[in-house]
Image (cartoon, rainbow, N blue to C red; front, side, top):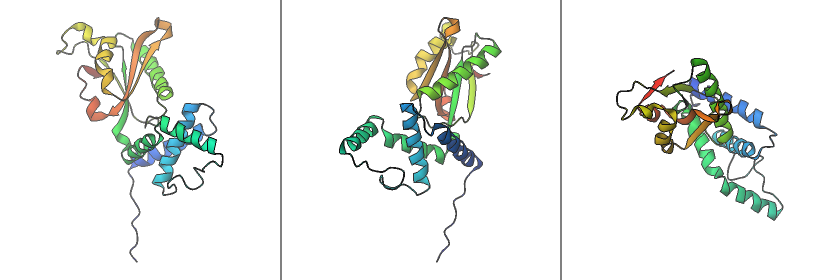
Length: 206
């Protein structure tokens, strides 16, 4: 009998798995509906990858004996595209380094303000996108470059203008408007792969 080779995992994959386990633990017993959906999708994805989950059978997903509750669960699943979320998480574990959270801040802010607004935006991103395949992984901090030579007009380096032109390109986007600055748009979070985000012209690293 041939000995089945154990799969090898990169350091990045191991760290992503550990982070996901910590996330599951923090979400366990949550009362927020969005967090329950995130917990369920991540739990099923990790279980499927371990070979311990098949076709809604087993200890994780038990069919309700109450027809009404069973139908309600199916409706919720359909509404939240649970299967799609599970597949997104599984793709993330296959290559966790692909997805990075890019935070773009207003270039007119001071360095300390940029740091604070970036933190606000990252936190808001996790609240708004519980389905996002990101477990406190890589952060890339950027801002529009006012000296970018290909701007058609200087106004294009303003965050509001830049965001309006680029927001529609991405599935996971969050904007942070600072209450202490008259709800001014101070930062934007985008989850995407490095190659695509690298194609956004006019940005510079903080």
